[in-house]
Image (cartoon, rainbow, N blue to C red; front, side):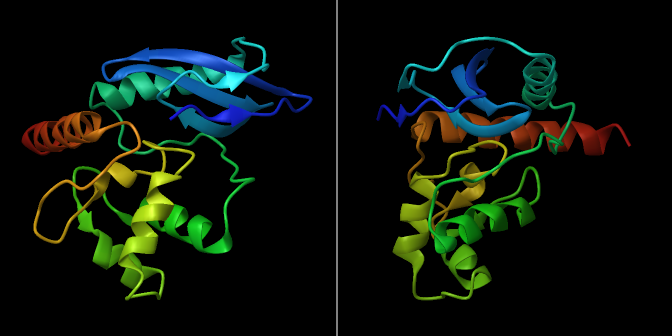
Length: 170
C-alpha cells in the first residue's frame, strides 16, 4: 500500500538498502517520522543528513545482530490516542521475543480490543523501531505485517539467532 505524504518544511526521505529490501526513511529535521517498505507517493526531497546517516548505521547494526534497541528520536504526529498507545507499548516486547495480539490488548487496558490492536499495528508508522513484527497470534501463527508476512518471518528469525548468538558469547 502506497502512503501519501505531504511535504513539511524540513521533511525529507532517505533511503536505506537492507537485508529485507529497500526502506524509505521519512525525517523531519533530526526526528524520524516513518519507515516505509514501499516508495511513497510524495514530493518530498530525497537527501541524506548526518542524523539520517547515523540512523542507517544503527539499522545495519540491528540487521547484523549487533544492537537490540535504537536511540533515534521519533515522533508520532498521526494516529489516534489508542493507536499511539498500542505503538508505544511495543517497546516493552523484548528483542528476540514475541507476544500475542491479546497480550498487547491487555497491556493497553482494552482486553476485548484484539482486532482493534491488529488494525493499529497495520498503521504503525515506525516498523522495526516500534517492533510490531514481535506480535503474533495466540496460537503461534504469525498474523499479518505491513511489510508482508515474509518480512515479519525474516525479522523474527534475525532477532532469534542474534539473541542466541549474544547469549552464546557471554
